[in-house]
Image (cartoon, rainbow over all chains, first blue to last red; front, side, top):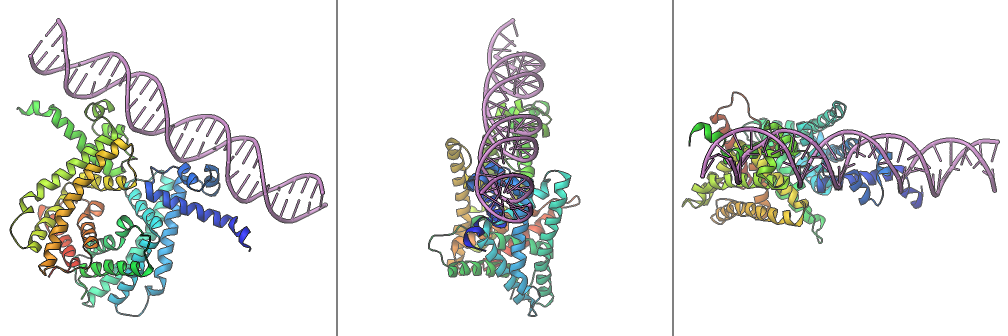
Length: 209
Length: 209
DNA sequence: TATGAACATACTACTCGGTATGTTGTCAAC
DNA sequence: GTTGACAACATACCGAGTAGTATGTTCATA
């Protein structure tokens, strides 16, 4: 596969659309983003987008799924690691927060997807697609939830209500999707330190010793 | 002012519109909410809304301002209280979190207002209005920010970066606007306990002793 | 009775999701 | 090397929804 042909591969074109859509949805939100906006940011027209995705909702859903898949892939090596739950949580949380920063446009779409679903997305047919994606995300959340539960049972964490604790924890870890923006001279080390502060804050909130 | 006339007072009618708008904006978001939606939820028509508010953006801005004013009024008694900063913070945080729960629709609009501004609201004229509201909110945030700074200087809190710490703190305290929903048999005591958990989590995150 | 506030009704202009159709380049078969 | 077929778009268009306006209507009050 040569360089030149790779540029015109359909899968690459598809991913370019997904990235542009993620950027648009992040910047303007779902409803305020038009397909024309996405196409324009690609230097293309609607025809290209609708050639690869049947509808705006499907495009959004695919960005959502892609974001979630990135997260699953990233935490995979640490999911079942045989170490104390607190330490496992710290690994998972660190990876997760890094994802929020490094793939922010996609993660922002995941967030908005949850919001849209909790309201009432669109057609009943679309709702089914969304429900499956939300399940996908719920399962992801359960990984973290079970880990902090295990840590509490082991006496390494201390909180009152598991559901609330998990909610607050995710809120903290996810927060960079709202306020983080990359700086020109920023290094990977800077990001790692930022992640460290966030994870430490969340750990304290969970009563980690 | 009798009961019957009070119902038809313009100020009351205006506030009814604001409340309905807050509810709609919370449920569907700004762009997905139409003026007709707001009017329909009032059992009225567009004419009523446009008689009191010049545009959709102005209506949204007024909901924003009302929400912020509620917060300022609520924390006022504790702003300058002559007690240790940590304790003052705990009071402020408790009031603030209570506001998030009890006036959720308005607070959700405040949140979306910040988001819309960070993107690029509408006309340059509207942007000026928004900028002033955002300043209003920034000043509110500074009250908390200065308090935790004072607490850290007094050795009662411990965190690395002030800006990040404030960001994470607000994220935790504000979070109920996303996941809280009232239960039928819920008492004021239940809400107070919920607030307590949230504030405790935030306090720990800030390294409060 | 007349005047204006507080709406309701009817209408316009415009955006945007979606579709139908046209165009271009590539590649395989003959 | 010509042709047919198909992928990957671009272009043109339609219909629905919606912000905003212009005008009509009611009703209290001066």
